[in-house]
Length: 163
View 1 (tube, rainbow, N blue to C red):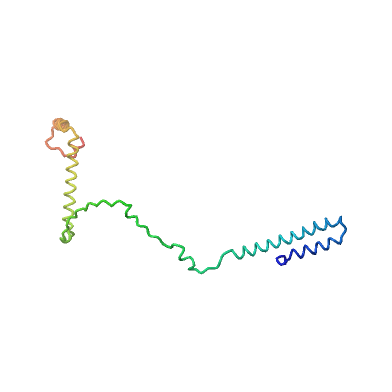
View 2 (cartoon, rainbow, N blue to C red):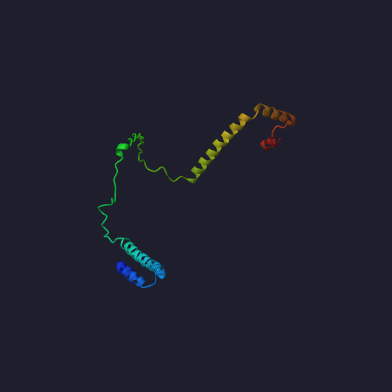
């Protein structure tokens, strides 16, 4: 039990024991006694330090102990530091009228007629586009020469296209 040692009493007992020994051995025995006393003192110090560390580790406090000391939330008003947002232009919306559906049942013949008409318009546009690219007068001359060379009264269009 190093923490309960009384060093004054222990030193007095060491001095009394050494005084009974011859002078040459007294120094050697005194050195060993001081060494042992220093070891006891070191163990005593370590014990006290461990007790102090154990006592000062994590104190047991209630959960709400720090409520008055710690800020949980904060509110910062930065509105004075911000520039105002420029007003947005409002788009004008067209008013839509509710007129009923434009979907209706259509007869098959009407749809086919509409498709034929669209194809004819596309074909007409294609023919006009080709006609502007072609040399029409050269074609007319070539057809006339062939017709005079054959000298037939009637010629089929398919035969004319092949020639």
